[in-house]
Length: 345
Ligand code: PEP
Ligand code: MN
Image (cartoon, rainbow, N blue to C red):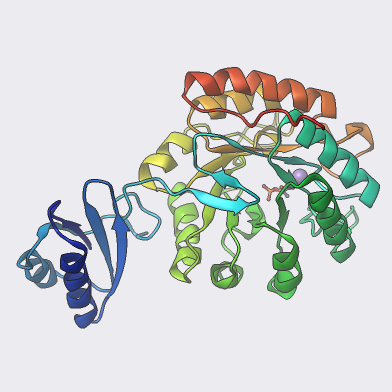
């Protein structure tokens, strides 16, 4: 249930409403807006409870939530969330977050080289996988903890916050120590135990949409994380599996404006996995920016034909810099900016 507080209510008036909600055995989630505050009531609701809340002083209106998710919904929190991801970078503000780097960290030199190149082109977050979900157990599955150390070194050297995937609860401490943002991969979108655990972590989480994840399932998965007390969730559209085989996945552009309507959480687009083909990455990144994405996740490799994973969808360092210029023009048309190229002293 959602309680809309009257505009003239003072902080003390709001406190009294919150106290009454708690007295009823429910939790209150307060969202303070510029014009009016909204209080989400968490717990079972009923018409009688709605009637009771409507009688309280300074309550303008009371609405039953129509969606199965609550904390992530825009009904619950009308203003867009801005997620701080460390070192002065946010996701959900006017400036796009551009998360770039290799699919997998292949060596210390490899991640450092790519980190410098993507930073110079304007990326403001460094990505790199150390624990890799691979379809075949015989392919490269990442460097594990050594990879995390190399990623941390590249992050320190460049000053970029880092994002890396957590695949298992087993590795949560070591990943949370290194990562500024914990990535939950598409294959784990509905690993509910993992979602519970990152919900208790003190780090932002980027939740990728599952290969066959419906929008409602995706938002409910995000709800698991918020329900554990972690409000810093970023959604990532990374393409879905359809009947089409001409590319790896079908980037679902519809998802971006729809999810932004349904939820206050920021949404990042991953046109690398969303297409599987490097030639499609820039046009789809431009389209996603025009559709309102709050950021991009882009795979970049110094020599994609030698990449140990996802070479076909990886941009070279030069192509990534070109993509940034192309996206910049589109961003301006939707009143967003891209982070500027890094100027070396
Ligand atoms: C990745 O980011 O490298 C990755 C494995 O992504 P996804 O979970 O979207 O397949
Ligand atoms: Mn990848």
